[in-house]
Length: 403
Ligand SMILES: Nc1ncnc2c1ncn2[C@@H]1O[C@H](COP(=O)(O)OP(=O)(O)OP(=O)(O)O)[C@@H](O)[C@H]1O
Image 1 (spheres, helix red, strand yellow):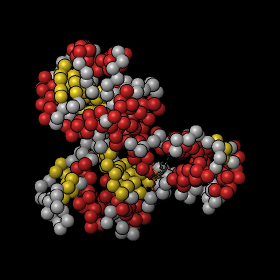
Image 2 (cartoon, rainbow, N blue to C red):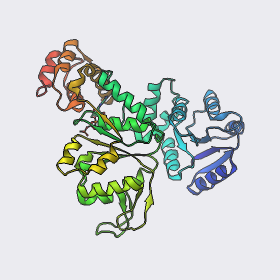
Image 3 (cartoon, rainbow, N blue to C red):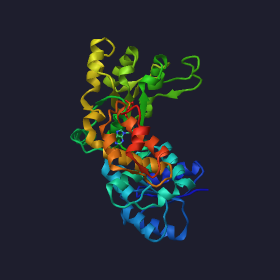
Image 4 (cartoon, protein in one colour):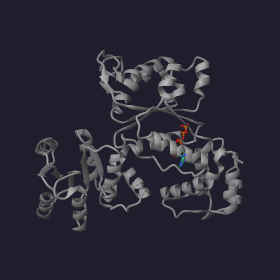
């Protein structure tokens, strides 16, 4: 049985968590202050600590640090009413496994406890992160608080174009403004959407992605808004749609330019009223969702052609972030190439290979019509096929079709 220690000065929170977690099969003890919690950990063994960030006496960070100093590397879940990225980042720096906002969503908490106490995740729980933002970013991608960020990586590039994209993200992320990300295939639009979420006040809440091009138009309504049991032939149980799943967080509508006109009308209503109704229900549900959309199409052209609603375009494009093609920021290619070499070699469990100077120069001259995705694929091919040093000859042989 998993032993949980709940540390919170509020009796109602201690009691509610104890009751609910015991009902779920955990053994739970509580403490009102940091020093009481420290005493309890001396006397009993726990598998996990759930701790309010401002717990009296010590505060959560000192409690966590002192447990670590005493060799007790328990996974630690921070409970807090503080929104914003700073407390999340601070918690991760101190080695917390997760950061859960109050009022506590019990399902999220249970998922986090189970994940933190799974043996394969214990290392993440016990690693004390070095105090660098990069480390925090890497560590947090493994932690459930930022589970939504899993798969997201750093935006590489210091070209003027990329610096201005990053600046725009920094400025826009903390607001709740809707953002439209435009750019060709493989330029990194999805990554930009992830960064917007990670740097927003909604970080830690869900990031839900919908590829509008991949869903048949007859299913999109139920996918986005959900359905009630029996509302159509195959609806054999109730289903929550993506808007509801994203409640409190960000909904990323990828390839919005491919959405059917009838689905566009329904999305428009959801954005105008912040309310949706499931298919087969006439009950309205209020949702709090930040919508970020992306497109590789010229939506103004699509409007002219009658394929895209102008009113929806204006709702979505409060801020537009254009992501430039790779050929317009060739100076980013060396750092991107190194980044992919490191990442892919690590994925394959290999030592990083070396790209020789003239090989890198050749990569920097290529067309890259498939943009960064194509560059990544070529680097992966080179890693699989080449010896430790990737030479100009290798690039000429294996990057064919790009040259
Ligand atoms: N600046 C960047 N730094 C590091 N990796 C990047 C960068 N931009 C893109 N990538 C990587 O390139 C690949 C393609 O990026 P992404 O999927 O975000 O592109 P996209 O514009 O959304 O593509 P599509 O329009 O085809 O959906 C991903 O593996 C992504 O992680």
